[in-house]
Amino acid sequence: MGITIKGLGFYVPDKILTNFDLEKMVDTSDEWITTRTGIKERRIAEIESLVDMAYKASLIALEEARIKAEEIDVIILATLTPDLSFPASACLLQSRLGCTKAYALDISAACSGFLYGLEIASGLLESGRAKNILLVGAEKLSQIVDWTDRSTCVLFGDGAGAAVISSDGDGEVLASVMRSDGGYWDILYGEKCGYLRMKGKELFKLAVRSMAEVCEEVIKRAGVSVENISLVIPHQANIRIMQALAERLQIPMERVYSNIHKYGNTSAASIPIAMYEAMGEGKLRRGDLVLLTAMGGGLTWGASLLRF
Ligand code: UT7
View (cartoon, rainbow, N blue to C red):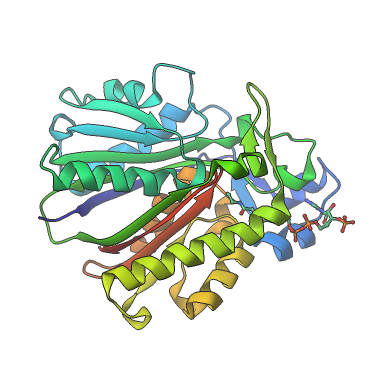
C-alpha cells in the first residue's frame, strides 16, 4: 500500500515585509537579520484569515491531485494560530471546500505540525481507515508576534501549505520518528491570548541536535545511505540551523532546500510550502527519496523519509 502525496499547494499573502521595513520598526538591520537567519523578507496576512490561506492552498493541492473535495475522508490542519479557539479551523475549511464526507480536526504541534500530521495521516491510510487525506499547515504568526521585540519579530511570517495524501500510488513513508519533550515548554511558547516568546540561543542548539538525531535514526531504520537521499527539506527556521544540520548529516547544502529568504519561519506551513516550491523548481521529483525534518515549540520534533 502506498502513502502518496498526490498534490501539493501553497498560498502566501501579497503583503511583503522586508528587513528594511523592520529597520523602521525596531532596532535591527538588514545585515544582522540576513547574516544571523538568512531571512530577507516575509509575508503578512493583512486581509486574509487563517482559513482563507488554508483554503487557497488546499484548492491547488486538490486540483493537482485530481481528487474531488467529496473524496476527502479526513482533514488535518496543523496550526498554532487558529481563527477561533473553537471550532477547529479544519471544520471551517471542511465547509469552505465542500468536503462533505470528511471529519476535520486541528493539531497543535507548532513547527512540527506538518510532520506530526503526516505521521497521523500515514497511520490512517495504512490501516485502511481513510483513502484520501487533506493535510494542511497554515499559520498567521503575525497576529501573535510582539512587534516591539526585535529578537522574535524579524523571524516569522504568514502562509499555508497543503498536501493531498492517498493510500494508492507509488509513494511511501520509508521511516519516521516523532518526539516531544514538554520539559522545554518555556523555550518557545505562546502566552494565553498574548505573544510568542522564545529563548533563541538555547533553541538553536536544541534544534540542530534534535533534528540531526531523528534524521540519523530514520536513515538507519530505512536502511538507506545518505547518498541516496535526493533532497532534505528542513523546517525553515534559520539558514544557520540548516547548514549545521547538513554538516552533521554530511549532506552538501545543494541537497538541502531553503526558501527562508522569502518567507521567514512560517511554522507548520514551512515544509509544505518548501515542498511545493522544490517541486516547481525541479528539485523534488517523483520517485525521489526526500528527508523532511522539523523542530518547534513543545518541544516537538521529528523526521520522515519519503519516497515521493
Ligand atoms: O521554529 C522553531 C525553531 N526556531 C528556532 O530554532 C530559532 C532558533 N534560534 C535562532 O534562530 C537564533 O538564536 C536567533 C536568530 C533567534 C538569534 O541569533 P543568535 O545568533 O543566537 O543571536 P543572539 O540571540 O545570541 O543575539 C546576539 C546579539 C544580542 O546582542 P548582545 O547581547 O550580543 O549585545 C542580541 O540582543 O544580537 C542582538 N539581537 C539583535 N540585533 C539586531 C537580537 N535580535 C536582534 C535583531 N537585530 N533583530
